[in-house]
Structures are given as C-alpha cells and as structure tokens.
Image 1 (tube, rainbow, N blue to C red):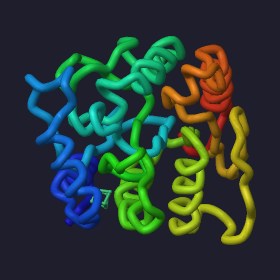
Image 2 (tube, rainbow, N blue to C red):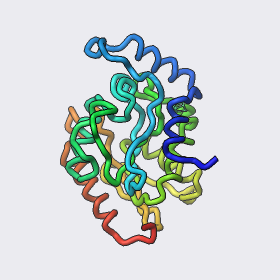
Image 3 (tube, rainbow, N blue to C red):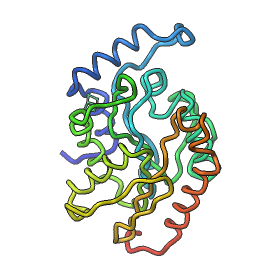
Length: 233
Ligand code: SF4
C-alpha cells in the first residue's frame, strides 16, 4: 500500500507500542488537571501536522501531558507551543501566532511539525527505547516530505533523534558527529541543512535561556537556507 501523511497520522493515533507511555497518557487524560477539568482530553498518541509541501521540518521532543495530550495536536495548548508558534508566525511559517486547539484555524506554511516521541512521557522524559520505537513515524514523514531543505531540532534529544533517523535512512555517513547547540547549522549536502535550537520549554523560556529573539535568529537562518538555490526543488 502506498504510504501517505494521513496514513502515518492514523497509525500514530492507533499506536500502542510503548505500554508505559500509553498507560501514563490515559491516566493523565482521566485524572486531568484542575484548570482543564471540564475538557475532554485527547489521551492518545499525537501525530505530526503541517504543510505537505513543507521545506522545513521541525522536530520536537514529545507532547506535553496537558498540552498535546489534552488537545491532540503537537505544541498545542501549552506555553511551549505559545512560544514556538508566535515565532513561526513572525517568520511567516504559521498563519496565526497562537495554537490552542485542533480546530483553531492554524495553518502551517512551508513547515511540518513532528516529534521524536508521539506520546506524552512522565517528567517530559521518553526512554531511549521509546524514542527508538517511535522513530518509524518520523522516518515515514521524512520520506513523504520530498521538498525538505531544512530540519530544525528543538533540543538535544530531538537533534539526536533526527540524526538517528537520517542515518537509518542512509542520508548521513554512519560515524560522522554533529554537535548540538543553539543556533548550530550543519550542512548535510544536497541542499539540506540541520539546525539546532534550545527547546522552547518553560524551563528555558522562563529563565531567559531561550528568548524570542534567539529563536527568531534561528528561523532567519532557516529562511536564508530556503532562499538558496537547490537541486531539491
Ligand atoms: S511513543 Fe510512539 S511508538 Fe510509543 S506508543 Fe506512542 S506513538 Fe507508539
């Protein structure tokens, strides 16, 4: 059967590969948090979403317990998403600066957002084997987004996940190292570059480790990357 982004999304939503994460997401969805007591939580794995013609792929860590796990859309309904989508809107990659629910009208432009793990993990820490189990979905999205020119990894774990996926896809030399840091750019050849940014978690944005201007600079570098001529189209 031919694969498609909607098929990947369906497979993600139905996935039960990681018992620890599935049990945790269900429990959080049942117990809820006080401020969202009146809402029905999604409680299932959270698929990626965006523009099928995207040239930019953003890889996050995993959905938040009361963000994506509540709303059913990655980086939606939490402070990290507020920070990220405001920046994407300023850079022209999002139709609006806010991301609050699956039906809020947000449209990504030339951009697709995914994650290394699609289920909210306890303490925001997926286990290495859970990240490995989930990599198939990122690999399928990678294969289904043929126009990609830039991959933006939000945080070190996302960078490692993106690199592992690209290695498995035969897109990188097996042993070459790629350092993580905020603002790094690695030229992967054939018109593709990998960028790193600190993750827009509250821990980073509330402490000033990651400011809006910091993320704007990374997105400006990505814009320059997309403006370069390439054989990838
Ligand atoms: S983290 Fe990924 S592989 Fe594990 S259950 Fe969730 S969707 Fe499936």
